[in-house]
Image 1 (cartoon, rainbow, N blue to C red):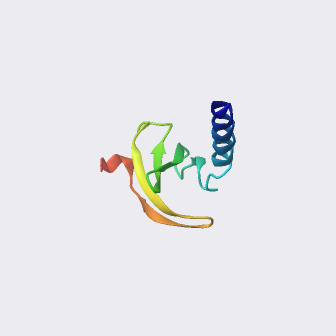
Image 2 (image 1 turned 30 degrees about the vertical axis):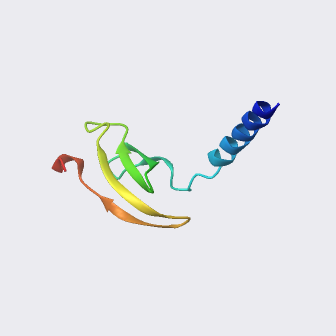
Image 3 (image 1 turned 90 degrees about the vertical axis):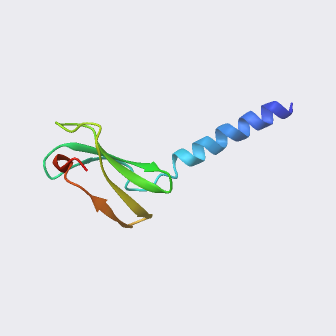
Length: 80
């Protein structure tokens, strides 16, 4: 019986975390028209290009929550 309760609790907890994402998390269009993914990584958020010549390249990090974020974004052609 204990296993059933633990499993049910884990499923409920997973569903809670799925709705706890920051509003910045998701796919965004860049100024050049490419798509970038902003996703949690560690305690910050990583920005990775999903389309274009530099697909898969991490181009920045952000920190913050709610409507207040700060960080750095680099030009992927600089190969930093």
